[in-house]
Every structure is written in C-alpha cells, then in structure tokens.
Length: 110
Length: 112
Image 1 (cartoon, chains in turn blue, yellow):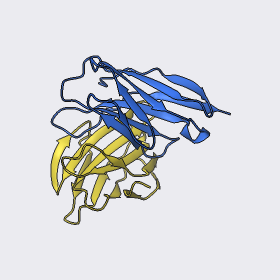
Image 2: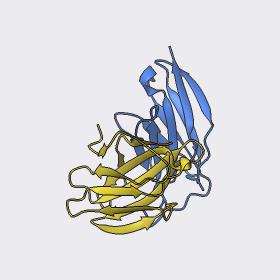
Image 3: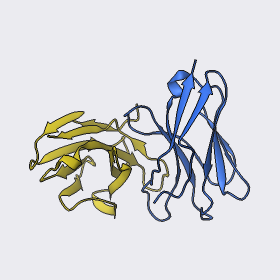
Image 4: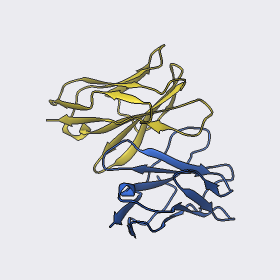
C-alpha cells in the first residue's frame, strides 16, 4: 500500500506557481520523499527528492515540514507542458522499489 | 530522454500466447526494475535485478519471469497471456546505491 496521501486533482493557471501537497505521516526516519510525474502515458519522470531539508533543482522545489509528516512540491512557473499526474513516493527501506499511489492530476490552464 | 530504452513500443497478441519485452538500462546502471501499469491497478512494481541477480520481487505473477543478461539488458517474459495482462510495462534503471530510478518510455501490451 502507498504510504502517501495526495489530492486527486488540482488546477493551476499558466505562469503561476503550482503547489502540490503530500501527506506521509508514517514516514520513517531514514526514508526519502520522492516526486515523479507522468505525462499522459509516458514513462514516469523523476522530479526531485529529499530527506529532511528543502531541496531545489531546475524543475521544482521540495518543501518538507520539520516533523517530516508532509511535503509540498512547488513548480514555480507552471506551463501547459506541466499538465501531468504527480506522484509523491516514500522510498521503502532496504529496497529500491518505488510504491506509487494514485497521485495528483495537475491540470494547467491558459 | 531518460537514456532507458524499451522495445517494442506496442505489442498486440492473443490470449494464451507468450511475449518478451526488452529493456536497455542507462549506461553504467546496474539495476533494472520492471513495473506494470494497468487501468485498475495503477503503477505496480514487479521485479528488480542487480548485475544479473534477482534482487527484489513484487506483485509478479508466476506466468511472468525476467532476467538480466551480462550486458545488463533485461527481458520480461509474459506467458499464457490473459486479457487482464493488457497494460503498460515500464522498465527503470538506477546505479546501485543511487536513489533515483529513471524510467523508459514503456511497452504497451494489448491482449485480445
């Protein structure tokens, strides 16, 4: 079972920041939070990951709360090409497999 | 482009048949993972290989098998196919000890 909870869908206006929340209240101390996205039926695309500090890369920022029970993925300037299903994943200890939940379907509109 | 390649892109076959899906990992990656994505089950982990050895098993049916060859490419064999096996099959790769998995474009299997 997925260890994360995400809203099923969100909308965002093009050019605005998209903030996608994720709840992972049962996360263990050394489990990472990963974000992937899947555009239409393409292969999932890695976005970002973090342990407890906030992270930023060329695609997005990841904000993890101090208690690590939730996080937010931020796309600073959403474009139409960011329309996708976004998956928040907690990596299972001692194995590299990813457990995908149902994700958040982000629709960016003009 | 993730650097992971999968062939074929599309596959149409009949129930009871056997098919082989192929995956070439990114250069230097030793681990290969297979995932299945169906409409009713979402993305599910099937199996992982590391440097030719099976490393982890997920919800993989006994009719399915996989292997990783010395050149590190991997094949997923699906036999006695059923209508419910129709799905997207993704391969991902990573360097051992590296957290990030990179996914290929997938193989869309349709069983008629």
